[in-house]
Image (cartoon, rainbow, N blue to C red; front, side, top):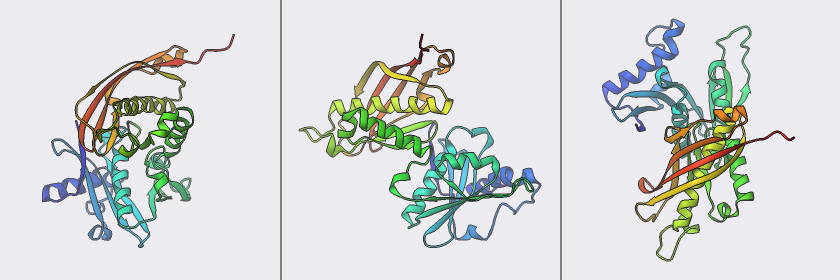
Length: 303
């Protein structure tokens, strides 16, 4: 199953868009129909996340408070699809849109129930609400938009991991491998072709293999942190199919749905075994498929 962010255009799409807003954000608080809309809707940018069948997964809105400040509002993912990374996809799209239109900072208002999500997306509390007297009060959060924080989810974790790679795996620095995005459920790495080009003007086969290997390694490392478990990751076995030359924009991606195995043995001090499939793309075209079997070596207590 694949997903895409679109702008609502048809009457049916608009109806579904506003209905999801009301069902999740207003109906539980006994607010009437119509309360899911406000005056900014006429001048705002609206986005909806849909699956292959056009089924609505989530919605979000962007409007500008000033030339420099953009605000996300009415962010919601359908309850049946929450905790799958879709919220990150919407935030990422809206932040990119804000950047393109000249915003230098983002503002979000959040209740306690969603505060943790936005903090993980790199937002910081600017004005803390009094939720003791009013549990429905909203905190105001802010996030400066700059090239360093284009990673939407767990940006500090991703920066730490990338720094570790560049310091301890010199080839990753020579290849200029960058963590482009992490959603909590998937990761994407990129590397400039100019730093990884062969005499034929295409990406080195070895560079493709390295990019794919680190992509799988990176997802496993970040997922360990999500689960608060630790261990040393080693590649036990890897194979790759080269499907076409990579000529333009090398990128590798893998999601948890592409992973088999479990982290559970680490909690008992045992090694964990995970297998996954990484896609290496040239823009949107599939260039190679990497299959890796990784072992996470559990930490042993000193005797």
